[in-house]
Length: 139
Length: 290
Image (cartoon, rainbow over all chains, first blue to last red):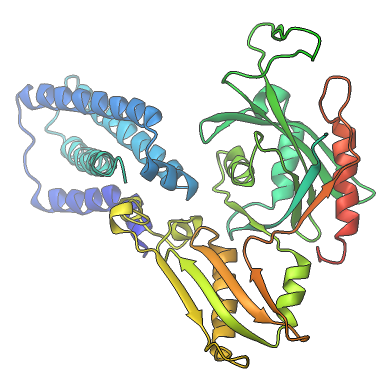
């Protein structure tokens, strides 16, 4: 397995492992709505961050970004950003659904947790790359 | 004095999972003009004209690079200069014609200092179809005379080379280097640039060990794979008639200039003439482009 392949699939792989852990431990999803509203807020903030990062990336013209672009990596960065945004969207939508359905249904908690982990790791992947891009701005 | 119409030759390489380039050309041919626009390295570029010559089994393409900066004026020795009257979003466009020979996988590209360069053409084809991960690479072909002089050498007296052992290329991506790690490759702060000069003794018969010949071959292969990784290979060779010749094994690119292509009334080289020029060059290089 190459590093690039792992970089591409790790949010899903980690999410799958965590889903199995959740299924095995079968914890009870909190009954009140607070966790849903907190999740929605965090999800919305992170989507906003990724959208800003995407606009920033489009205006960046640094040697490291040029090298990445020449080597064909720009498609990967764009796809990581896209995945981050879409996963967070699905996470927010699923969380919103929690207001209208019985959250004690075991599959709700399992799906919510899986989406949470996948979107978190997808977000962290973009953050790490963006921070490194800024750190290496002039090199 | 009119400038000469210069043509460079390139080999076309595509990575394993990429579509044949001809498939991309067929897609471009079907697309209307506006849909062919792409922004490559920050500049708007498109294939303005594309045509398949079934008789000779070659493709003719004419690229344009839309200049979004200032441009020249028109005038003469007796007439004051004035600007061009552009309508709407019109601006200056730089034209670059090329011929693609699918049979031998070669591309002959017109040299236009302000037009699209081969690296832009590579990216244009690689990025044209979004859904497929295509990677095409153009590798320059070298002057046959230099090749012959190098092949006919008695021995090498001096070898100068400059290598950047870690230059990020498309190959790194194909091999599976992650984006996070790729950012460190070719980083100025971590870059290693080696410049080596190996010289034989000053005596008349002083020559470098034949092992150096293998080094040259290895470096040339590396240069074809990663042009930016090897920036210099210069060899001083002794020819069969005992003359010392300095050969630049990278800079002597396969190039041909034609002086008889005349600009039209609008001071542009007509597309048909540029295509004809490229075809003539292709005919002249028939033995080289195998």
